[in-house]
Amino acid sequence: MRAVAGSPAETPRAALTARVKRLAAEHGLSVSAVTTAGAFPELAERLERHITAGHVAGLDWFTPERARFSTDPRNLHAGAVSILAVGVAYWSVDPAKPDDGVPRGRISRYAWGVDYHDLLKERMGRLHRAIEAEVGGPVEARLLVDTARIVDRAVAARAGLGWYGKHACLIVPGRGSGVLLGELLLDVELEPDAPLDKHCGRCTICLDRCPTGAIVAPYTVSTPRCLSFQTIEQRGAIPPPLRPLLGDWVYGCDICQEVCPYTKATRLPPDPAFLPRTIDNAYPALPFLLSMGDAEFRALYRGTPVTRTKRRGLARNAAVALANIGTEADVPTLLIALKDHDEPLVRGHAAWGIAHLCARLGLPVSRAAEAALDRSRMTDVDDSVRREAANAFDIGGLEGGVGNP
Image 1 (cartoon, helix red, strand yellow):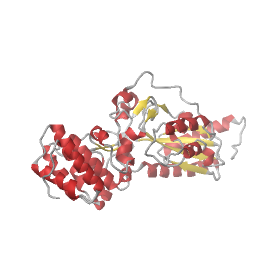
Image 2 (tube, one colour):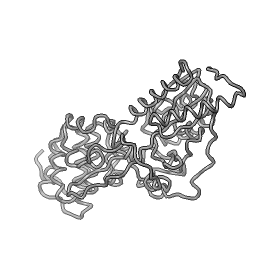
Image 3 (tube, one colour):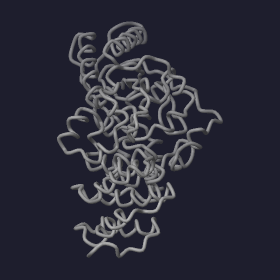
Image 4 (cartoon, rainbow, N blue to C red):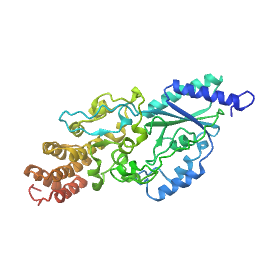
Protein backbone atom coordinates (compact mmCIF):
# COMPACT_ATOMS: atom_id res chain seq x y z
CA MET A 1 0.00 0.00 0.00
CA ARG A 2 1.29 3.45 -0.85
CA ALA A 3 1.27 5.79 2.14
CA VAL A 4 0.43 9.45 1.66
CA ALA A 5 2.46 11.63 3.98
CA GLY A 6 0.89 14.32 6.11
CA SER A 7 -0.79 14.98 9.45
CA PRO A 8 -3.50 14.61 10.38
CA ALA A 9 -3.81 11.58 8.00
CA GLU A 10 -7.28 12.50 6.76
CA THR A 11 -6.33 15.96 5.52
CA PRO A 12 -3.71 15.03 2.89
CA ARG A 13 -5.76 12.01 1.87
CA ALA A 14 -8.81 14.20 1.29
CA ALA A 15 -6.71 16.76 -0.58
CA LEU A 16 -5.20 14.07 -2.82
CA THR A 17 -8.67 12.65 -3.49
CA ALA A 18 -9.92 16.06 -4.61
CA ARG A 19 -6.94 16.44 -6.95
CA VAL A 20 -7.49 12.96 -8.40
CA LYS A 21 -11.14 13.78 -9.11
CA ARG A 22 -10.11 17.00 -10.84
CA LEU A 23 -7.64 15.01 -12.94
CA ALA A 24 -10.42 12.58 -13.86
CA ALA A 25 -12.56 15.42 -15.17
CA GLU A 26 -9.61 16.89 -17.07
CA HIS A 27 -9.10 13.53 -18.79
CA GLY A 28 -12.65 13.24 -20.06
CA LEU A 29 -14.20 11.23 -17.23
CA SER A 30 -17.23 13.33 -16.44
CA VAL A 31 -18.04 11.78 -13.05
CA SER A 32 -15.92 10.09 -10.39
CA ALA A 33 -16.24 8.87 -6.81
CA VAL A 34 -14.23 6.70 -4.40
CA THR A 35 -14.87 3.57 -2.38
CA THR A 36 -12.65 1.08 -0.61
CA ALA A 37 -11.37 -2.09 -2.27
CA GLY A 38 -13.25 -4.26 0.22
CA ALA A 39 -15.46 -7.15 -0.87
CA PHE A 40 -19.24 -7.14 -1.47
CA PRO A 41 -20.32 -10.31 0.42
CA GLU A 42 -24.05 -9.56 0.37
CA LEU A 43 -23.89 -9.01 -3.40
CA ALA A 44 -22.58 -12.52 -4.01
CA GLU A 45 -25.71 -14.00 -2.42
CA ARG A 46 -28.01 -11.75 -4.47
CA LEU A 47 -26.27 -12.66 -7.70
CA GLU A 48 -26.48 -16.37 -6.99
CA ARG A 49 -30.22 -16.04 -6.32
CA HIS A 50 -30.54 -14.11 -9.58
CA ILE A 51 -28.78 -16.91 -11.47
CA THR A 52 -30.82 -19.64 -9.79
CA ALA A 53 -34.05 -17.83 -10.77
CA GLY A 54 -33.02 -18.06 -14.44
CA HIS A 55 -32.69 -14.29 -14.90
CA VAL A 56 -29.35 -14.59 -16.73
CA ALA A 57 -30.24 -17.58 -18.90
CA GLY A 58 -28.35 -17.28 -22.16
CA LEU A 59 -25.31 -15.66 -20.57
CA ASP A 60 -23.56 -18.97 -20.01
CA TRP A 61 -20.37 -17.30 -18.83
CA PHE A 62 -22.18 -15.74 -15.84
CA THR A 63 -21.83 -18.64 -13.41
CA PRO A 64 -22.12 -18.71 -9.59
CA GLU A 65 -18.33 -19.10 -9.49
CA ARG A 66 -17.84 -15.97 -11.57
CA ALA A 67 -20.39 -14.11 -9.45
CA ARG A 68 -18.51 -14.93 -6.25
CA PHE A 69 -15.16 -14.00 -7.82
CA SER A 70 -16.58 -10.70 -9.10
CA THR A 71 -17.65 -9.51 -5.66
CA ASP A 72 -14.11 -9.24 -4.27
CA PRO A 73 -12.05 -6.59 -6.11
CA ARG A 74 -8.83 -7.92 -4.60
CA ASN A 75 -9.20 -10.99 -6.78
CA LEU A 76 -8.21 -8.65 -9.59
CA HIS A 77 -5.65 -6.51 -7.74
CA ALA A 78 -4.38 -8.03 -4.52
CA GLY A 79 -2.73 -4.78 -3.41
CA ALA A 80 -5.71 -2.53 -4.08
CA VAL A 81 -6.65 -0.11 -1.32
CA SER A 82 -9.08 2.22 -3.09
CA ILE A 83 -11.36 2.08 -6.10
CA LEU A 84 -11.94 5.18 -8.19
CA ALA A 85 -15.29 4.68 -9.91
CA VAL A 86 -15.51 6.79 -13.06
CA GLY A 87 -18.05 7.38 -15.78
CA VAL A 88 -18.59 9.04 -19.14
CA ALA A 89 -22.00 10.49 -19.93
CA TYR A 90 -23.19 9.38 -23.36
CA TRP A 91 -26.85 10.48 -23.46
CA SER A 92 -26.51 12.76 -26.47
CA VAL A 93 -28.84 14.85 -28.59
CA ASP A 94 -31.21 12.69 -30.63
CA PRO A 95 -31.01 13.57 -34.35
CA ALA A 96 -34.43 11.86 -34.75
CA LYS A 97 -35.32 9.24 -37.30
CA PRO A 98 -35.53 11.00 -40.68
CA ASP A 99 -38.85 11.08 -42.52
CA ASP A 100 -37.28 10.12 -45.83
CA GLY A 101 -39.51 7.27 -46.92
CA VAL A 102 -36.87 4.68 -46.02
CA PRO A 103 -37.82 2.07 -43.37
CA ARG A 104 -35.20 2.52 -40.66
CA GLY A 105 -34.25 0.67 -37.51
CA ARG A 106 -33.04 2.05 -34.23
CA ILE A 107 -29.70 1.61 -32.42
CA SER A 108 -29.20 2.15 -28.70
CA ARG A 109 -27.63 5.54 -28.00
CA TYR A 110 -24.50 4.22 -26.32
CA ALA A 111 -23.57 2.50 -29.61
CA TRP A 112 -23.99 5.51 -31.92
CA GLY A 113 -20.37 6.59 -31.68
CA VAL A 114 -17.06 5.04 -30.65
CA ASP A 115 -16.79 1.81 -28.70
CA TYR A 116 -16.89 2.92 -25.08
CA HIS A 117 -14.59 0.08 -23.99
CA ASP A 118 -11.74 1.57 -25.99
CA LEU A 119 -12.63 5.16 -25.10
CA LEU A 120 -12.82 4.56 -21.35
CA LYS A 121 -9.63 2.50 -21.26
CA GLU A 122 -7.75 5.19 -23.17
CA ARG A 123 -8.95 7.99 -20.89
CA MET A 124 -8.42 5.91 -17.75
CA GLY A 125 -4.90 5.06 -18.90
CA ARG A 126 -4.06 8.74 -19.26
CA LEU A 127 -5.61 9.39 -15.84
CA HIS A 128 -3.48 6.64 -14.32
CA ARG A 129 -0.33 8.28 -15.64
CA ALA A 130 -1.50 11.66 -14.33
CA ILE A 131 -2.07 10.15 -10.87
CA GLU A 132 1.48 8.79 -10.90
CA ALA A 133 2.77 12.25 -11.75
CA GLU A 134 0.63 13.72 -8.97
CA VAL A 135 1.97 11.39 -6.25
CA GLY A 136 5.50 11.44 -7.65
CA GLY A 137 6.02 7.74 -8.27
CA PRO A 138 4.62 4.49 -9.65
CA VAL A 139 1.05 3.57 -8.78
CA GLU A 140 -0.01 -0.03 -9.21
CA ALA A 141 -3.42 0.05 -10.87
CA ARG A 142 -5.91 -2.19 -12.62
CA LEU A 143 -8.19 -0.51 -15.16
CA LEU A 144 -11.57 -2.20 -15.59
CA VAL A 145 -14.33 -1.61 -18.13
CA ASP A 146 -17.47 -3.77 -18.40
CA THR A 147 -15.94 -7.10 -19.46
CA ALA A 148 -13.74 -7.45 -16.37
CA ARG A 149 -14.94 -9.62 -13.54
CA ILE A 150 -16.27 -6.89 -11.29
CA VAL A 151 -19.80 -5.60 -10.74
CA ASP A 152 -19.52 -2.04 -12.06
CA ARG A 153 -22.85 -0.76 -10.75
CA ALA A 154 -22.27 -2.13 -7.24
CA VAL A 155 -18.89 -0.40 -7.03
CA ALA A 156 -20.32 2.87 -8.35
CA ALA A 157 -23.29 2.72 -5.96
CA ARG A 158 -21.10 2.11 -2.91
CA ALA A 159 -18.87 4.98 -4.03
CA GLY A 160 -21.86 7.32 -4.18
CA LEU A 161 -21.50 7.90 -7.92
CA GLY A 162 -25.21 7.11 -8.30
CA TRP A 163 -27.95 4.81 -7.10
CA TYR A 164 -29.81 1.84 -8.52
CA GLY A 165 -32.92 2.68 -10.48
CA LYS A 166 -35.79 0.22 -10.68
CA HIS A 167 -34.65 -0.62 -14.24
CA ALA A 168 -31.41 -1.91 -12.62
CA CYS A 169 -29.34 0.84 -14.27
CA LEU A 170 -27.28 3.25 -12.19
CA ILE A 171 -28.82 6.72 -12.00
CA VAL A 172 -26.22 9.48 -11.70
CA PRO A 173 -27.37 12.86 -10.36
CA GLY A 174 -27.70 15.37 -13.19
CA ARG A 175 -27.03 12.74 -15.86
CA GLY A 176 -29.63 10.05 -15.36
CA SER A 177 -28.71 6.51 -16.38
CA GLY A 178 -26.89 7.46 -19.58
CA VAL A 179 -23.44 6.96 -18.06
CA LEU A 180 -20.86 4.29 -18.98
CA LEU A 181 -18.83 3.03 -16.03
CA GLY A 182 -15.26 2.01 -15.33
CA GLU A 183 -13.02 1.46 -12.32
CA LEU A 184 -9.41 2.12 -11.37
CA LEU A 185 -8.23 -0.24 -8.64
CA LEU A 186 -5.37 1.63 -6.96
CA ASP A 187 -2.78 0.97 -4.28
CA VAL A 188 -3.18 4.62 -3.22
CA GLU A 189 -5.30 5.42 -0.17
CA LEU A 190 -8.06 7.84 -1.14
CA GLU A 191 -10.96 9.27 0.87
CA PRO A 192 -14.07 7.11 0.36
CA ASP A 193 -17.33 8.80 -0.55
CA ALA A 194 -20.61 7.90 1.13
CA PRO A 195 -23.35 6.08 -0.81
CA LEU A 196 -26.23 8.29 -1.91
CA ASP A 197 -29.45 8.12 0.10
CA LYS A 198 -31.71 8.36 -2.95
CA HIS A 199 -34.25 6.11 -4.64
CA CYS A 200 -37.01 6.09 -7.25
CA GLY A 201 -39.86 6.45 -4.79
CA ARG A 202 -43.15 5.10 -6.07
CA CYS A 203 -42.31 5.60 -9.75
CA THR A 204 -42.71 2.44 -11.84
CA ILE A 205 -42.73 3.92 -15.34
CA CYS A 206 -39.76 1.81 -16.48
CA LEU A 207 -41.54 -1.39 -15.41
CA ASP A 208 -44.77 -0.29 -17.01
CA ARG A 209 -43.23 0.68 -20.36
CA CYS A 210 -40.80 -2.22 -20.90
CA PRO A 211 -42.17 -3.77 -24.12
CA THR A 212 -41.40 -7.36 -23.13
CA GLY A 213 -41.98 -7.15 -19.37
CA ALA A 214 -38.29 -7.91 -18.84
CA ILE A 215 -38.19 -5.80 -15.65
CA VAL A 216 -39.96 -8.51 -13.69
CA ALA A 217 -39.75 -6.63 -10.36
CA PRO A 218 -38.14 -3.41 -9.17
CA TYR A 219 -34.37 -3.68 -9.65
CA THR A 220 -34.69 -7.10 -11.36
CA VAL A 221 -34.25 -7.63 -15.11
CA SER A 222 -34.84 -11.05 -16.63
CA THR A 223 -32.17 -11.19 -19.33
CA PRO A 224 -33.90 -13.66 -21.71
CA ARG A 225 -36.81 -11.22 -22.17
CA CYS A 226 -34.69 -8.10 -22.56
CA LEU A 227 -34.48 -6.66 -26.07
CA SER A 228 -30.86 -5.69 -25.52
CA PHE A 229 -29.99 -9.34 -24.91
CA GLN A 230 -32.05 -10.60 -27.82
CA THR A 231 -30.67 -8.11 -30.36
CA ILE A 232 -27.03 -8.25 -29.22
CA GLU A 233 -26.09 -11.32 -27.21
CA GLN A 234 -28.55 -13.81 -28.70
CA ARG A 235 -26.57 -15.71 -31.33
CA GLY A 236 -29.40 -17.93 -32.53
CA ALA A 237 -33.02 -17.35 -33.38
CA ILE A 238 -35.02 -14.72 -31.51
CA PRO A 239 -37.98 -16.50 -29.84
CA PRO A 240 -41.05 -15.95 -32.07
CA PRO A 241 -43.25 -14.53 -29.25
CA LEU A 242 -40.69 -11.75 -28.69
CA ARG A 243 -40.19 -10.78 -32.33
CA PRO A 244 -43.26 -8.52 -32.66
CA LEU A 245 -42.17 -6.74 -29.47
CA LEU A 246 -38.83 -5.67 -30.93
CA GLY A 247 -40.51 -2.85 -32.84
CA ASP A 248 -37.80 -1.11 -34.85
CA TRP A 249 -34.88 -1.90 -32.52
CA VAL A 250 -31.97 -3.57 -34.31
CA TYR A 251 -29.28 -3.09 -31.64
CA GLY A 252 -30.11 -2.74 -27.97
CA CYS A 253 -33.06 -0.90 -26.44
CA ASP A 254 -33.31 2.43 -24.61
CA ILE A 255 -36.98 2.47 -23.64
CA CYS A 256 -36.58 2.03 -19.87
CA GLN A 257 -34.03 4.86 -19.88
CA GLU A 258 -35.94 7.13 -22.25
CA VAL A 259 -39.00 7.09 -19.99
CA CYS A 260 -37.03 7.60 -16.77
CA PRO A 261 -37.67 11.12 -15.43
CA TYR A 262 -34.06 11.48 -14.29
CA THR A 263 -32.64 10.64 -17.72
CA LYS A 264 -35.27 12.68 -19.59
CA ALA A 265 -34.26 15.71 -17.52
CA THR A 266 -30.62 15.53 -18.67
CA ARG A 267 -29.64 18.77 -20.41
CA LEU A 268 -25.83 18.55 -20.45
CA PRO A 269 -24.02 18.87 -23.80
CA PRO A 270 -23.14 15.48 -25.29
CA ASP A 271 -19.65 14.01 -25.35
CA PRO A 272 -18.72 14.34 -29.06
CA ALA A 273 -17.32 10.80 -29.05
CA PHE A 274 -20.84 9.39 -28.77
CA LEU A 275 -22.43 11.34 -31.59
CA PRO A 276 -23.29 9.25 -34.67
CA ARG A 277 -20.95 9.61 -37.62
CA THR A 278 -23.85 9.14 -40.05
CA ILE A 279 -27.59 8.73 -39.70
CA ASP A 280 -27.10 5.00 -40.31
CA ASN A 281 -25.10 4.78 -37.08
CA ALA A 282 -28.27 5.75 -35.20
CA TYR A 283 -31.17 4.93 -37.52
CA PRO A 284 -29.93 2.46 -40.16
CA ALA A 285 -31.86 1.74 -43.34
CA LEU A 286 -33.33 -1.74 -42.93
CA PRO A 287 -33.05 -2.77 -46.61
CA PHE A 288 -29.34 -1.92 -46.47
CA LEU A 289 -28.83 -4.04 -43.33
CA LEU A 290 -30.47 -6.98 -45.12
CA SER A 291 -28.27 -6.67 -48.20
CA MET A 292 -24.91 -5.48 -46.84
CA GLY A 293 -21.81 -7.61 -47.19
CA ASP A 294 -19.00 -8.02 -44.68
CA ALA A 295 -16.98 -5.13 -46.11
CA GLU A 296 -19.93 -2.75 -45.93
CA PHE A 297 -20.71 -3.84 -42.38
CA ARG A 298 -17.13 -3.22 -41.28
CA ALA A 299 -16.93 0.12 -43.08
CA LEU A 300 -20.05 1.46 -41.37
CA TYR A 301 -19.68 0.01 -37.88
CA ARG A 302 -15.94 -0.49 -37.32
CA GLY A 303 -14.90 1.10 -34.03
CA THR A 304 -18.44 1.07 -32.61
CA PRO A 305 -20.10 -1.45 -30.26
CA VAL A 306 -22.40 -2.61 -33.09
CA THR A 307 -19.77 -5.05 -34.34
CA ARG A 308 -20.56 -7.22 -31.31
CA THR A 309 -23.78 -8.48 -32.86
CA LYS A 310 -21.96 -9.34 -36.12
CA ARG A 311 -23.38 -8.86 -39.61
CA ARG A 312 -25.71 -11.85 -39.43
CA GLY A 313 -27.16 -10.72 -36.09
CA LEU A 314 -27.81 -7.21 -37.34
CA ALA A 315 -29.40 -8.52 -40.55
CA ARG A 316 -31.54 -10.96 -38.53
CA ASN A 317 -32.76 -8.06 -36.40
CA ALA A 318 -33.42 -5.99 -39.52
CA ALA A 319 -35.69 -8.71 -40.92
CA VAL A 320 -37.73 -8.64 -37.71
CA ALA A 321 -37.84 -4.84 -37.56
CA LEU A 322 -38.92 -4.55 -41.19
CA ALA A 323 -41.74 -7.01 -40.53
CA ASN A 324 -42.80 -4.91 -37.53
CA ILE A 325 -42.81 -1.46 -39.16
CA GLY A 326 -42.80 -2.09 -42.91
CA THR A 327 -45.51 -1.77 -45.53
CA GLU A 328 -46.61 -3.97 -48.41
CA ALA A 329 -43.85 -2.34 -50.47
CA ASP A 330 -41.25 -3.99 -48.21
CA VAL A 331 -42.32 -7.58 -48.89
CA PRO A 332 -39.96 -7.84 -51.91
CA THR A 333 -37.00 -6.89 -49.69
CA LEU A 334 -37.82 -9.75 -47.32
CA LEU A 335 -38.34 -12.09 -50.29
CA ILE A 336 -34.86 -11.32 -51.58
CA ALA A 337 -33.42 -12.01 -48.13
CA LEU A 338 -35.35 -15.29 -47.94
CA LYS A 339 -34.06 -16.48 -51.29
CA ASP A 340 -30.54 -15.05 -51.46
CA HIS A 341 -29.07 -14.20 -48.06
CA ASP A 342 -25.95 -16.21 -47.28
CA GLU A 343 -26.86 -16.63 -43.59
CA PRO A 344 -29.52 -19.24 -42.70
CA LEU A 345 -30.33 -17.24 -39.56
CA VAL A 346 -31.38 -14.30 -41.73
CA ARG A 347 -33.29 -16.40 -44.25
CA GLY A 348 -35.31 -17.97 -41.44
CA HIS A 349 -36.26 -14.64 -39.89
CA ALA A 350 -37.13 -13.27 -43.33
CA ALA A 351 -39.57 -16.17 -43.76
CA TRP A 352 -41.23 -15.27 -40.49
CA GLY A 353 -41.11 -11.60 -41.46
CA ILE A 354 -43.02 -12.06 -44.71
CA ALA A 355 -45.91 -13.83 -42.98
CA HIS A 356 -45.90 -11.47 -39.98
CA LEU A 357 -45.84 -8.29 -42.07
CA CYS A 358 -48.80 -9.46 -44.16
CA ALA A 359 -50.75 -10.66 -41.11
CA ARG A 360 -50.04 -7.37 -39.30
CA LEU A 361 -51.39 -5.33 -42.19
CA GLY A 362 -54.28 -7.69 -42.88
CA LEU A 363 -52.96 -8.41 -46.37
CA PRO A 364 -53.09 -11.69 -48.26
CA VAL A 365 -49.71 -13.25 -48.94
CA SER A 366 -48.97 -12.83 -52.64
CA ARG A 367 -48.61 -15.83 -54.90
CA ALA A 368 -44.93 -15.00 -55.38
CA ALA A 369 -44.34 -14.84 -51.62
CA GLU A 370 -46.29 -18.03 -51.03
CA ALA A 371 -44.27 -19.83 -53.69
CA ALA A 372 -40.98 -18.58 -52.20
CA LEU A 373 -41.99 -19.72 -48.72
CA ASP A 374 -43.02 -23.12 -50.04
CA ARG A 375 -39.73 -23.55 -51.88
CA SER A 376 -37.81 -22.66 -48.71
CA ARG A 377 -39.98 -25.04 -46.71
CA MET A 378 -39.17 -27.85 -49.10
CA THR A 379 -35.67 -27.22 -50.41
CA ASP A 380 -33.59 -24.89 -48.22
CA VAL A 381 -30.35 -26.59 -47.20
CA ASP A 382 -30.75 -25.54 -43.57
CA ASP A 383 -33.17 -27.30 -41.22
CA SER A 384 -33.90 -24.13 -39.24
CA VAL A 385 -34.92 -22.22 -42.39
CA ARG A 386 -37.22 -25.03 -43.49
CA ARG A 387 -38.88 -24.96 -40.05
CA GLU A 388 -39.28 -21.18 -40.11
CA ALA A 389 -40.82 -21.33 -43.57
CA ALA A 390 -43.20 -24.09 -42.50
CA ASN A 391 -44.22 -22.06 -39.44
CA ALA A 392 -44.81 -19.04 -41.67
CA PHE A 393 -47.64 -20.94 -43.34
CA ASP A 394 -49.40 -21.11 -39.98
CA ILE A 395 -48.89 -17.38 -39.40
CA GLY A 396 -50.16 -16.50 -42.88
CA GLY A 397 -52.98 -19.04 -42.96
CA LEU A 398 -51.54 -20.55 -46.13
CA GLU A 399 -52.18 -23.96 -47.64
CA GLY A 400 -48.73 -24.84 -48.97
CA GLY A 401 -47.98 -26.96 -52.00
CA VAL A 402 -47.33 -24.05 -54.39
CA GLY A 403 -43.63 -24.61 -54.93
CA ASN A 404 -41.95 -27.67 -56.34
CA PRO A 405 -39.95 -29.87 -53.95
